Amino acid sequence: MIDLAVGERCEGPVFVGRDGRRRLDRHAAARIVRRVAGRAGITKVVGPHTLRHAFITAALDAGVPLRDVQEAASHADPRTTMRYDRARVSLDRHATYIVAAFVAGAAR
Image 1: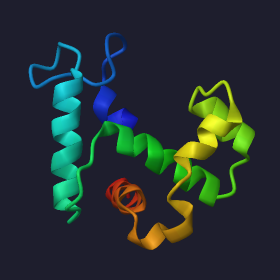
Image 2 (image 1 turned 90 degrees about the horizontal axis):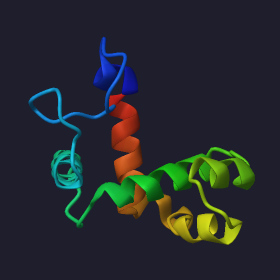
Image 3 (image 1 turned 90 degrees about the vertical axis):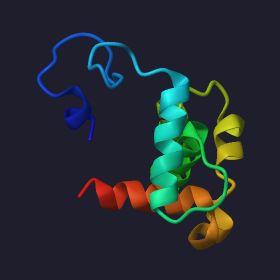
């Protein structure tokens, strides 16, 4: 998916606004995430930080070692990473997991 965002560019920000030059700001990113969540049928409030939860939950569920997930999330303490892992008890009903499953399906 990153390849689609970058295209043929060799420099500059990975995610750009509609003009193709300026960096995507946090408000635009939040709108995109909310729009995708809505298309996935998620009625709960979802934002960019939800994707962080989804990544950590999906990685731990897939068996990625905690230390590797901690490093990927840039957490200094593994307890911080484990706090993000709140969805593993009921993955099928949690908005984080639904977003992760939707994004994974869209990437195919």
